Length: 330
Image (tube, rainbow, N blue to C red; front, side, top):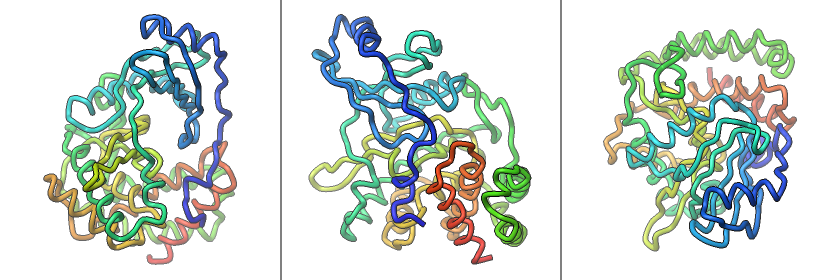
């Protein structure tokens, strides 16, 4: 397993190239004749293209987010950013949305640029105090996200209604896994022995998710170290923004909790204690075995990664390693 997980995966899709004159026209139209003085491709995304544009006048810097993976989901992502803003969840300000691909080759959002560093960068080599402080900030963040309720679990439409209900708990996890391992690409990448171990794990452990009695809530589903920006205030760390809302849906908190406790940082008890303290202090409710439930829920992500046609060898290797890590404890 790679030491930093996501950093080593690489992109599965080619970064979109946008003509400089198209960027100039866009900036001038949206920001009162502003000129683009610099363009930088931002790291972190595995499929979509994110460009930082420096402008010669206010707002100074913006991010152009070009939707490659799910162009039809861009309106939903814009609605989720607006929902986050209404609920005080730190996220990049939404400045413009365009669902038509003709102007730049893909639908896009224009977002306000948020100063901060990626959580995974802040955690690299951090001392114990910093790890605990960052964990507390992430716990506060997730408690705010999960405080937004939905009547039922499922995938959201552009109006943030549940367009496709899904079954949560152990039954839902087992059904999803069964569907995924029937995918020939997943079966080939994981191998028969690993699929058998995974099946045994889910038969033995997935029912633990049924003990959660909380209702459906907003789940970001991609709250990893490259999508959380943090900043230091001089006395403590805070979350500056939670980025990339394309996978958010109405579900359970364990999808996000499992994402944030992936190795290597998820093996640090100070990180776990920090998340729990921040979450509970902010009004969130957690069962005692939340890390185990989070890791079970996070299996959905690893199976989804393994199904992607453009998954890189490094990503596939980490899918195998994470399933082996969890299935070994069944």
